[in-house]
Image 1 (cartoon, rainbow, N blue to C red):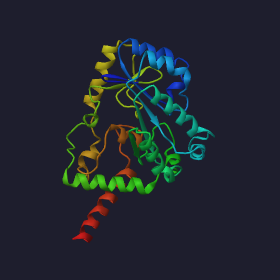
Image 2: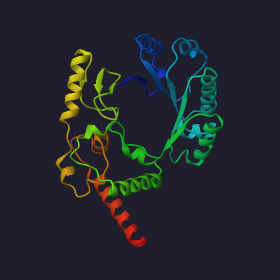
Image 3: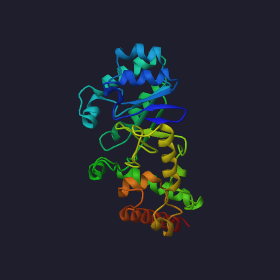
Image 4: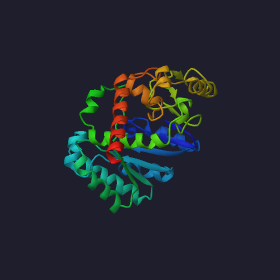
Length: 280
């Protein structure tokens, strides 16, 4: 859960939680504006009353394809798109704001345009990305199998081109690149408060501390966190955009670098420079 001016109930899949209704209504009664992040598969009539009594600020649905066949490939379920479509239409009838997002992979890239068109004809905001961040909880080799390599390389090269003209200030601390710096937080399923959902640290328990004390410790952790010395001394630091999550998901810790990732940045930079020479 992420707090700022409201609460986001993210996944896994929040509707699978046995106490979802109690958690949702309790937060709503406390006055929080709630945004729900879901795959949309479980949205059905049973939620009509709860959403009528306590309307969410919005519901963000991950769209994995535009057909049941693609949902079978991506999610392993036979009627995925049909069920998600029904859930989306139910929310639209209730006039609840819906936003669709997609991560484009090798399994659904052929339906990318169909997903965008589906959002267009239903007049629903839509965003897609080809980037799949590494994970510190999952074997990244598995993620490499579904990534669209061309999309990642194109995105990184465009990013480096931008930062050649707009250099990154390595003196800025890692957490200052996060829009939720000193504003937002995540509460994990086991009661730990963190500033980023991609991290496994810090281990600050809101079960053992008051919220005020836990929050103070979290801010202290953010303020004290700094780049590894290798980053500060790197010749490519001005074009290598990263945050604490980038470090952790590539190296396993916010305090270490991943030499393979660093090499990729150097290679992308050289390709940009070679393109510039060719175009002169």
